[in-house]
Length: 316
Image 1 (cartoon, rainbow, N blue to C red):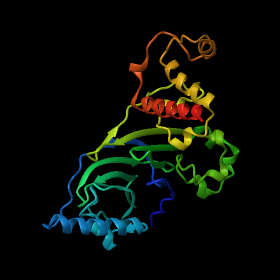
Image 2: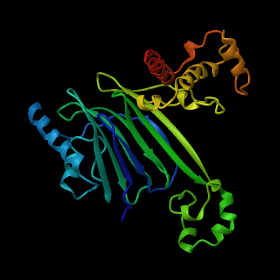
Image 3: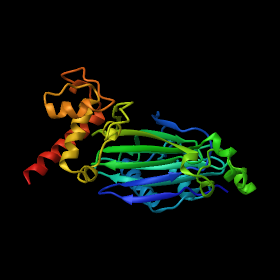
Image 4: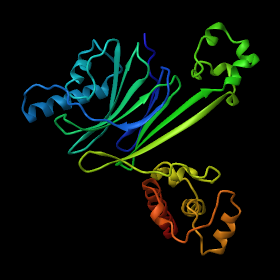
């Protein structure tokens, strides 16, 4: 029987953050927009379909993991894209937000005899017609996938994975491990964690940010693909920061974040103090007087939010 996914739920203002521990092997596949295949639906009125969808959505939101034999799983075929009944399959779903004109859900489908798990972020009209779908396919034993709703309209999908180094299998710790541990695959970091050290595995991270527009469509936000890792705050170029995260930093650190983003594009500063600081950074290569046009969507959002917080903090 399939091992249940580990789901950690932490409610935000109008949404939540969910972590799923995948139990299958393979490689992590980045997020991608997928074409929605409309599920079959009976010929009923808009109002009837709306009542039926809201009843289904409320039930799914309260339920645990569903198997193919559950009536609610069968009902899902009317509303959730890509939920044709599959042998030995399981479904888990939660509502992330409900608005006047649409609902936002995530759902996971997994199968005992297939590699990987399908994780889906989908928006719906009030009557249950799917508007847009973002799908992530987790295909490693230790992939950890989380989704967060930030500032009511920005979603973050984060994919973290672990890979054991080949050298680990030549150590005495592996040689002395029980046969049941030795039989596991090289990607099964979680099952082997009592027998390994941090230096024995590598961690990889992949982030995607989406903005949900007024039409209910998920717009992927651009980000700087390779920020200078020796920066003090490189994450300001890779993911959208939440308001409460920004508030944890002192104003001087936030001001450095703002200037660091520009410095990573080679901005030449008029301030002698900033020039002196960045000239000492190994990654800084001053080349341009104007770099604003080079900023990614993620950087523009972070700059706007950070500068707004600095302005308010200085007023107080």
